[in-house]
Image (cartoon, rainbow, N blue to C red; front, side, top):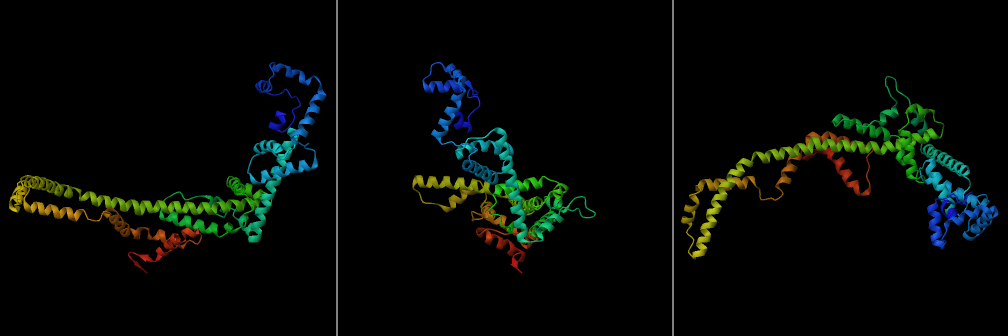
Length: 393
């Protein structure tokens, strides 16, 4: 009973289980001597009689039964279609599927064969569905995808291999080429294929397999598998190329604009630090004397004598030096609490000409799109093409 509920079938030898399991069941059943279980196999017919009783009591059905066999195959084919699993994983789930569908598992060889057949059917269905969607979108698309497997004259690798290669340098030229790569891949318009009926993990697995295959292997593949693999890999590259181009753009903006502007503002602030420190020391000495004199006046209840206060202050710093120091602090420390951000924005505006070509290239790409929440940002980026150093034109 435990075997059929756990592994989905009746064991040929019911004693072929770990002895710890037998002892555990003996405790549950109140049997003091678990070794008596060895007598169970003395009468062979008892095994079959109990198997039939257990099957009827728990609603299990023979795998050979047409209706229940069909239910199991439906489960198995559904699993193979929705999960990109290998043969072993599908075989393991097939055993669990017997318990789910209420049918007893067949022999290991039968189960392995049915799992392999389900994987084959699912793969053929995947290839036919993807290739069919490509042909419906554009009858010339399969031929165009196959053409990417050819190696142009004078080149060492195929067009597909060239499109697979991501940018390796953080330069303006590399960014321009990255956007050209985006537009080349976008020209196939594979993102518009209607493939919602295909589980995304199956498309991802197909793309990974195609990306790991050389062009000659893809070229030798039979149809519709070849078209399906090329469609999957191009769809994958369509999104990946955009991400890689944007990562490169982010790197360029950081190295050519943000980091440079930050260093410039920090350098300017550091250059004024000695002057600010000198003025602050003068003001600190004068303020200390002034506060001490005011405390004495308050303590004795006397009237404030301005001349006496200035005399006390001038003992530590001349009046002209105090006034000059105050003017220096006012000029170097603006009243605006966000002065650092203001200086940073000013530095960014001064450096805009350096990154303007990158922004223009980004705005000119027709492959970039955005969700509804990002439409305004994308429109702003494209609008920057008309911004010229503080004016529109």
